[in-house]
Length: 436
Image 1 (cartoon, one colour):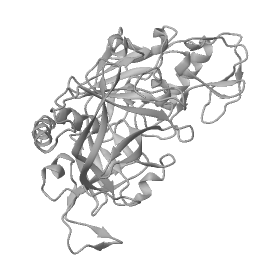
Image 2 (tube, helix red, strand yellow; image 1 turned 45 degrees about the vertical axis):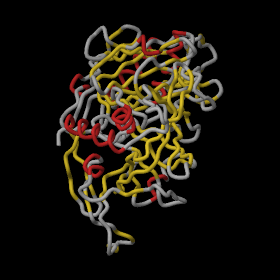
Image 3 (cartoon, one colour; image 1 turned 120 degrees about the vertical axis):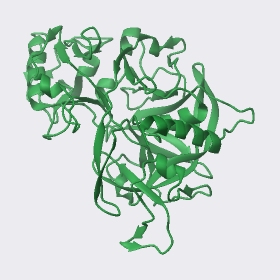
Image 4 (cartoon, helix red, strand yellow; image 1 turned 30 degrees about the vertical axis):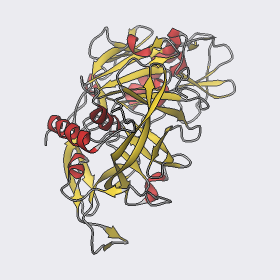
């Protein structure tokens, strides 16, 4: 089934099987989740309520994840938990890779006809039972919280092992996936149920003590009482791609399906207005998902292919104020400075502006000192970009630190991503919302 047919199918299926809490046919236009950076793992953590009776669950944000997955092995009790059955609509929507093979300790259960897909935590992947249960989420009324909406049959996955949570933060029970092209991604399911456009926006707070916000649905996206952060967006197309997926449960097999990751075209990088001499071939995404640029919450800091990092680092050092001196590197960073004599303003450290230039020369994202330099200890700041340690993957992976206090909209219905530039220019930040 093609992606476009998936969404038509999904819309009709979820519209029939889902209702809302309100007796007046409540149809929210925008929903929201609060999100906060975990100081230990540097992951961005949100919370949902799921099951019957409702239970709060801490989940890691997975921008390129196909769906919601939750650890169902430990302390999982719900009277409305309902596994999807082989050849059902839920199995089709969730890209089932196997069916009717249920194993416990390598022993096939005598009666089982569940279906399975692939779930991942960035480090490893495993099989997951496709299922559904009650899920609630808060709506937005202007710039304040609105009524709570409830979905009785929200599709998600339960990994066949609880080991998948080991690489997540403390008490985090799973991941919430917002990937493109996936019929059961978090935002896509809500868009289908509540009949709004397939779009969402993230506004990650730079504070580990104050929440940022994820908007699901239509703008406006209010940060502060009267400021709509969506009004300043510049857009670049999302690049869609196919990918090979390796399935090991219950049998080893490789399949091709749409990639849920967010790729964009970065045609060049400028520092203080000067275009850097980068290898253009590295900036192009190929059919194997090599090269190019990915937007991701997988990594805390933007990762650069080694030759790109070397050029960016040298140019950044050259354009730094002369009174700011280099100091020895502090892992994972390679380019560090004495912060004693660096200026600080409402835009962060006095650092040369970095531009990621997209598909047109006049369409670019500005990275200012607040997002290009990070304090790693007293008196030491470092360039908040790291050199990639693996030989494969994207040439540029834009990480969470660079997205903090910027509003980034993912408009899936129009296949584009919008960037606001730093909200500090508007004398506000992602934590200045009223959705607590």
